[in-house]
Image 1 (cartoon, rainbow, N blue to C red):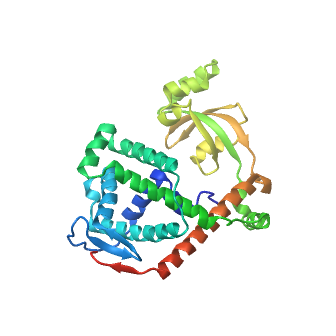
Image 2 (tube, rainbow, N blue to C red):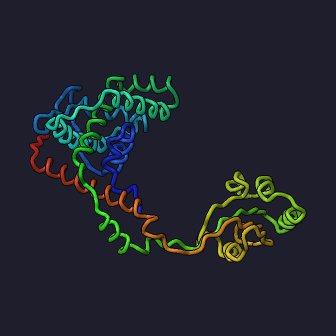
Image 3 (cartoon, helix red, strand yellow):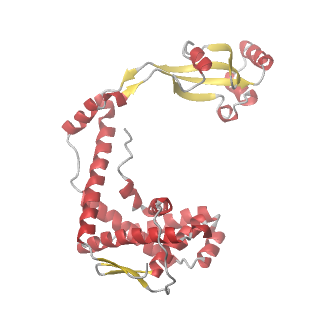
Length: 321
């Protein structure tokens, strides 16, 4: 179970995260459309009473170019932007009907978050200023995007209000997915990896003489990633490591140091620091995570149903697409 799944729609309307989710959606869509040359303010699509213009598309394209560069500007990506803007137009119209007006302070915060994220992508404030000018993206555009993001976020909260699950439903999920909550036996270990048996013998002698394991791992281990943490590999279960390595690791006692263990990677010396026995997580341990997962799943279903209804009733007319 992944408690974070089912919230993709909500994530899309959170400040700069809306841009990231939007970009991923745009890049991943394989829609094919040839966009004719149209003027800057030309209407490309009407959605009920909302007009989507070339300027609207260019505003998003400018943001994408700041993030990815000029190569992102393709007919396929522009077509996907229009699809996204159609969806947003429907949602913003629904928000207007419900009187949704985002808090100005929230919008200011979103503008700051978007600006900082774009600054990181561009490589600093000066470079961001340069590329914003190049792609005709102004501060007003960031305010525009942030306002839309916060409006959609507030609409989401309204649509999913009251959506939830009962304790009985949470328990039913637990009972029907008990295998998901089985925790295997695990150990936490450090290791020192050497390229020859002779070097491994030298390090083992130093350990036997009282040298600190973590210090020797940091100074001599060929596994540079774990060496930065004194050879710490964290917790792992059976099947996560080379067979020879785990055969030894799972037989060592806590605080016990192995002899020299050879794998296809090299020669290892292992120190086991912690061990957890195989067990099944109890209901009380996971109930909160299950509820969060099911809540988000149901919220997503409710929001998708809401959007589908808007699409079904919408009048969408393509003009310059």
